[in-house]
Length: 389
Image (tube, rainbow, N blue to C red; front, side, top):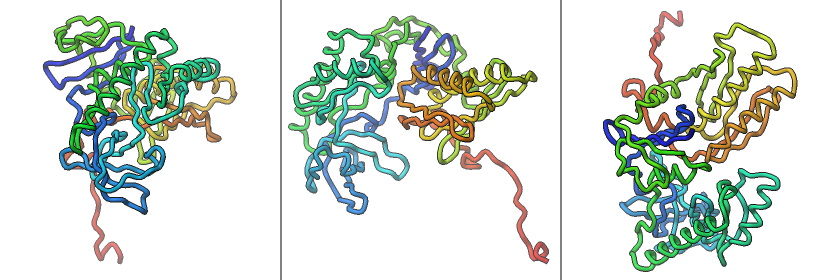
C-alpha cells in the first residue's frame, strides 16, 4: 500500500512516500524559496548577451534570471526595460542565474496547460493506442488559442474530472494576467507549489492514506489522514534514508548494487556479492532484483542526466529483455521523465533521466568543512632535491 508519511514536529519537517513500508521518495517540507521551479514572475528585460543568444531578466529581490531566445514563443525579442511574464525552469545554483522561459506551463494533476502554446498531445510516458486515444481527447478539450498536454494520470480519470482540472488551470492563468496588469515589474505573479501539493499532483495513483503528527497541517490533501505521534519511526525512515545514501546497497539474494556518481552522470555496478551460488539462474535473479532496486534508488536519490547500470553479464538476449522489462515496470511510478535506451555494446544499460530537483544528498547532507566533501584523507610526500638525485 502506498502511504504518505509526514513529520511536522521533532525535527526538520519532511514527507516520505512509502510503498509497502519501503521508502520510495523523500521531500523536505521547508517553504520553497521565492525563485523556485514553476514560479511565474513579471520580470523586466535587461542586458542582451548576443554571443549566448539570451538576455538577463530582473526578478524581485535584486535577483536575475537567464532567458534564452529559444525560450521565447514566436521569437519576438523583448525590448530593454519591457515587462515580461516569465517562469522559472531551473532555480539559481551557485553563481548561475535562474533559467527562465516565456513558454509558460501550468501543471495540474491530470493536464498541463500551455497558455502560449498551440499543441495538443498526450504524455510522452505513454505509447501506442493509449497515447493515441489520449491525444485525440487532448485535441478535443484544448482551450481556444492555448496548448494542452494530458498527463498519464488522465487515463484513469473521467472526462468531467479532466475538464475540471483544465478549468482550474485556465482560472490560474487569468489571475496571472490580471496581476501582471496591476503590479510594477519585477513582481511575483504565481508562487511555486508547496512540496506536499507537488507530491500528490505528480503521483499517478494517489497514496491510500497519510500518516502525520499534525493532522491539521496535513488536512486538505484529498486523502484520508491518520494521526501518529512519531510517523517516521513507524517505517524507520531515518534508517532507510541512511541506507539509501550508502555507496553499496544490498539486495535480498545477497547481491549488491554499487553506486558511483561522477561529473558526467552516475554508474551502478551489480555484483553477486555474498551469494556464493553461480549459474545463469542466480545471475538472472540478482539482475532482476537489481533492476527493481535501481529504479527505486534513482527516484529516491533524485539522480538525473546519464545513468549506466552494469548488470552481471548475461549470455542470452532473452534474460536481458526480462531485466529491461522489470526495470521499465519499476519506473512507471516515477513522475520524472526517464528514457531507457537499452543495452550498449559493452552490456551496460543506458538511461537518461531529467534533472528535476536537488538530489537527496544535496537535500539531506552538508559537505565536510575539512575536506570539502571529498571524503578522502591521506598523505602526500613533498618532492625534495633528494627525490631527484
